Length: 387
Image 1: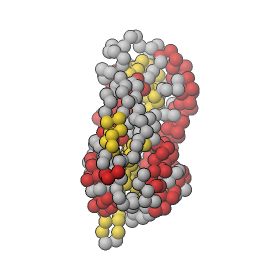
Image 2: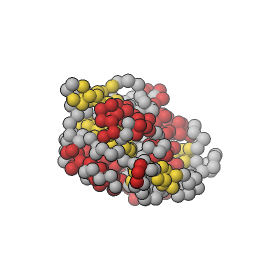
Image 3: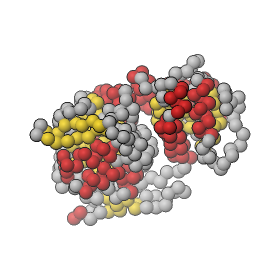
Image 4: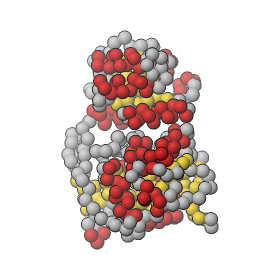
C-alpha cells in the first residue's frame, strides 16, 4: 500500500475484523503502519490518509473502528482533527501518534482529555520506526485491545460489597455477556492496619484516571506518600507529574534516585526507569533501575509493588487502575501475602479492564470500585475505617 487509499477497501477478508484508518503525512510511515495492520488476520486497513482534513471528510464513508492519528500534519493537525472526528462518531477509538518531545507529550495528554483513547510514541527517525519491534508490538496491541473493547459488549461488575466479618471472603459475581461467562470475584478483608503508603499502577486510560483521583486525595496525601507507576515513556512522565501537581495542589514530581519518600509527596516513576523503594538507616528512599523491561513495561508496576513489601508490609495499600495487560498482579500477590490491601478500578469506568481485571480475578482485591468512589474509600481507610 503506498500513498492514499482513494476509497474504502472492499469487503473484509475475515469475519468482523477491526477496521483501521491510518492518518499520517509521511508516506513511508503510514505505508509501514498500514502494512503492519493489514498483516494481522483480525484487522483491516480501510483508509490510509495524509491529513486530518481527509480523515474528517472520509470518516462517515469509511466507518473505521480505530483511527491511528498523527499529531503533526498539514491542513488540519491531529489535535484539531480529534474533536471533529469524535463529533461525527462518539464511540470512535482514536490512538494518537507522536514523537518523544515535550511538546508532543503535552499535546498527547491534552488529546486524552479531549477523548482520545490512547497514544503511542513513535521512534525519532523513519529507519528506527521500520526496525522497532517494540513500536510494532505496542501499536498492534493497542489497536487490538481498544478495537475489541469497542466491538464486544462488556461484562460490567455489580457494585462491590465489603468483605464479610471475621475475615471471610465474599464473592462478587460478574454479569453474563456474549464475551464473558459469569465468574465470581472473591474479595479479601482489608488489612487491620491503616495504610502508611499508597501505591498506584496504571496504563491505558491512566492519565485521566490519575488526574480525577489525585484531585480528591489531598487529605490522604498529607498522611502518607503516594507512589505512581504509569506506563509512559520519558518526557511524558515529566508532563504527567506536572499535571498531577496542578490537579492535586501538591508537589507531584518525577522521582529522583536516592531521594527520601515522605508523607505529602507524590512520586511518579520516570519513563524508561523502574521505580522501587528501599529502607535503610536514613529512612525510605527511591531507587531507580535501568534493568530490562518487566511485562514488556519500563517502568513496571510489579517492580514498585514488590519493593514496597519489606518497607511497609501489611500497612501497604495498592491501587490498580485502568490499563491493558497484567502488570501489577505479581506485585499485588506479594503485597497481599504480607497482609497488605489491594483495590482495583471496576470495568465500567476503565478504558481497558486488563490490569485491574487480572488482580481482581486472581482474588487479590479487597474492593473493586468505580473511579469516582475510590478516593473516598482511600480516605476512610487512612482514618481507620475498614467498611
